[in-house]
Length: 108
Image (cartoon, one colour):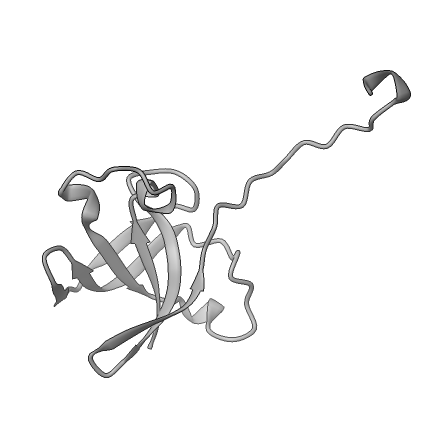
């Protein structure tokens, strides 16, 4: 089963974490992204929650309200459950729109 792992943005930036910020949420990859989708796909919306990691990995159900770039948690990785193991297949980095302006000779 392919999953998206959500967690604190501080993990991505190697910032110190409070205990609550160490929580990871594992959500099923939506059907629309199962085949041939970009890993930079839009993940906003409600995703099926399959597990949570706090002090250990535990099964969970319900929904997780996902956001792409802001909120309490952000997508950190795409992984697969293979038996009791989780294998990370892609790390997700923040994709930011950069405004590019043409340079002129006077900008140098």
